[in-house]
Image (cartoon, rainbow, N blue to C red; front, side):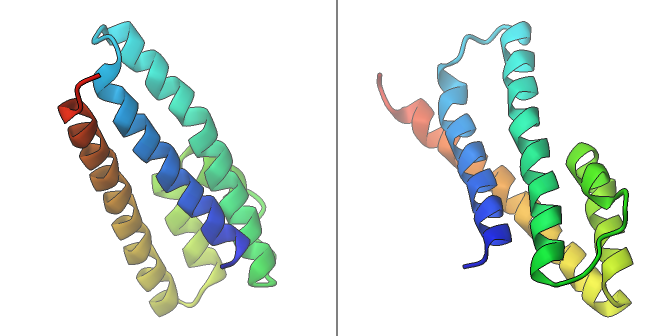
Length: 121
């Protein structure tokens, strides 16, 4: 498995852990905002790293703003990165895969929260 996929798997693991901890956190709005903010930093770093590693593994030069855009604003940055570095059919397929990955992360986080909420601590 290449390093860019390992970064994506670590991102999945991060969201599963977040989902598992979420039911056990105090329900105040400030606590949830703080948890989401803390989750945002490793997410941005993971997306930035993924973009750099993917470009290195494919032996391409990524567009200059792509890693930063992917890290800070992934819904715009990921399609931008794919459209600038791949042919249109390949980019569209990669964007669809990225959407499925995002949906998978959301499902995994929700399942982890559901299972964790059923566990008596």
